[in-house]
Length: 229
Image (cartoon, one colour):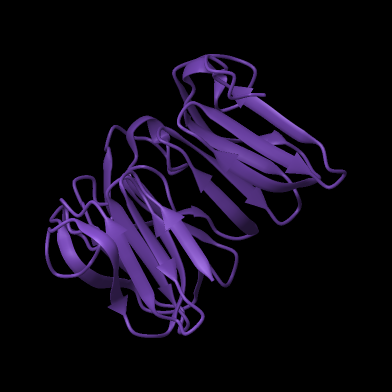
């Protein structure tokens, strides 16, 4: 029912609510209590998981009671537990009321049932949308939006945010124009770039995509390898 691909590891949720992981496990991102790579899926949680998200070396889990759990690398606080200590088993970071989870390469997002959006992890260049004040590591959840969010997509150095009014927002490092503001300044604070009619978003390492209610697809950012189509 849910699948996530990280840098070198994968995770999937089955219809019975069980969570399975496989691949690289250098930082404990598989959550099996070891740092041993796995060539075949290993069951990590027996039941009650509804969604999983994967960053480069960490994993975020959403359970059906609205709690959020994390595991793996924690260099930038991307596990949200208030430390920068790696974890090879899942640790609860949100007690209740979460409805979705997402990851950038070294940061994480939690969407709450009131439409607010929380983030934790690497905030270098303001990539999470949280105000950049020179502090790169957010080790506990911080509020990006107080409400009105329906989806978020994290790349490597930038993020896209879709609000319930169909507006599109972006933030982060703007090399090659991936933040979509029509300029190439180094750091872009959280700002609206499309007013309405957006229904889907996706962020790569150096480029971005969104699509609209009439089926149009828009792209911006690096086109070095033809990734804008």
